[in-house]
Length: 464
Image (cartoon, rainbow, N blue to C red; front, side, top):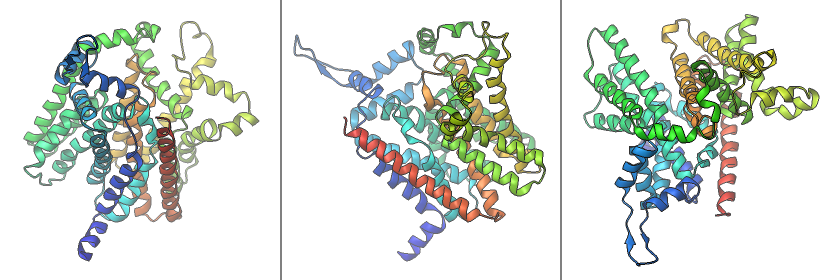
């Protein structure tokens, strides 16, 4: 028994088990029956006709089929959502805790090579820093199954890329698991885009590098492409877009460039308005890394721009606006839920400032990430950053860019968590001065965030 326990700690499995237990404790009293959850439950639960006393059966398959033609291409996700809600809330609790654990497992499997005991401890701390209350926005089950579960399956489906890149053996029973995970994640628009990009990119790179084709990479690439084609050809998505444009009346008049810029400004606006703690984690570690490894002032200034931005306009905004009241006007424009530059105001240079400020922040992060390695081709952090950013920027091409709130930030948020973890690994490997304090702050922040989320969930449940 002692040997088994020792092995659990040495290989980092204890951290994942702890994450699973913590998630169970967090959501064990949640009843997913509000907002979209309530609507879905009514649609799949049998009811009695008050006039004839006959039972009216609601078939999940029929309901999902109708949604395909009239609202959404997420037929796999919504089928699982309906089945879960119809079965039991405890099934959702168990699966949700498992999915969060799979997120941790997948990131660890892809990015942790050694010292798993310490690495996994920091990794789950960073995952616990994520503001989980976002998963309540459209109803606990509806939001988690539509966002957290595709994220988990997307990351799990990327594990074969790492294994084949390093020539690791994939067990026979793992193949169907990876493919099923890809199909589930591929049913989500943002996840599908990421999977297509990663699989096609690495399939091409491996063909060039190894001078041979890896059949399973091709299979996964075809499945990913099929998924996105299924999304693009779904009639319900176009019906929904027309309906959603009634909320965003000017959307139809926006040009490609307008939507592209909107994707960036809406993303940064949400980061600032919600004082995104994951963004703060990333920019803090990035600044620490640059200051620890480079003496050039220009590098240090560039690394500080994103961190200072979130501190001045986010976490310390009340103090900032008290001392510099006019900055609040800029903040309101920066966080507005609308297109910033229009025909009506394009002759005023002031309205270009938030756009310049937004791009400056994202560019500064990208430039700082380029300094993590001397060889750009080995800089996986930049690739993850661009992929995560793209997953949110594409929301600018949807009329639901503002209505869907911060839950569509989940892929960017976890991209930032992964990058933060990669930066921490480098800091820890080099034994940067103060690394123990950094570890302590990360773990303390995770504990406080966990308690913060627990208080929110448990206090809200009293009202149900």
